[in-house]
Image (cartoon, rainbow, N blue to C red):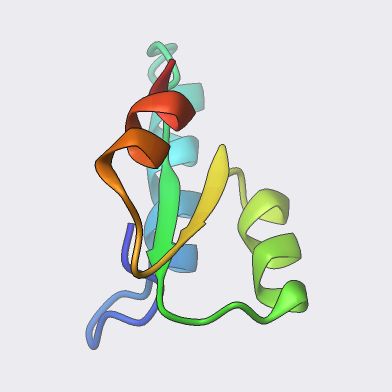
Length: 69
């Protein structure tokens, strides 16, 4: 999830996805932030809105695969 999208940022998008999952009794999908920023309060905010992880760019494919397991 890109955190800084122009119309709907990753934080708001995650909140909306989590609301839909809960209201429609859907299985929770994994959501990971992928960002160039390594600001610690930003990663805390990711977890606070319901993201499952936080990956900084540049990243290696192995990191993403490990996170999804």
